[in-house]
Amino acid sequence: MAMSPFAADDDDGLMNEINMTPLVDVMLVLLIVFMVTIPVIRHAVKIDLPHASSQKEETKPAQVSVSVQADGTIVWDKTPVDLDTLRAKIAAAAQQQPQPELHLNADRKVPYEKVAQVMSAAQAGGLTKIGFVTDPNAR
Image 1 (cartoon, helix red, strand yellow):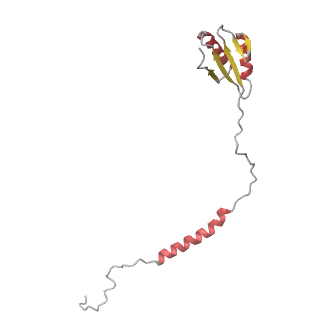
Image 2 (cartoon, rainbow, N blue to C red):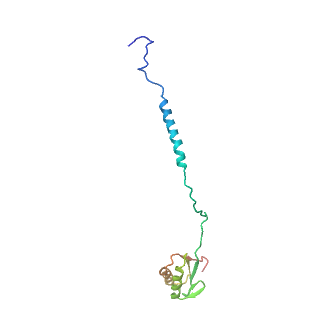
């Protein structure tokens, strides 16, 4: 151990600088790898795909109006029918594509039994969409 202030103690001291040479080497290798692989990735096969329109085609189903009048008469689209004819018309309407909506309008004085018969006939016939039409101003 030399006691002079001019002694070379470079081997034992800490290194305060980062060695940039390995970092630059790694970055250059990565740059070359990316330069080689990007043209390979961009190579694509041209395919002629069909074009689709962006507008949704809306086909609204037909509406069938069924009314039950105060005296118990069943009306199919303004034509009075009996229960058997109603079942036949419902079965025919259920076969249509798209299936029509059944709009049921019942007089407030009709017993619920008649309305339940129409709903049961619609369900048995295969109609799945039943809507109730009401008139809030009816007395």
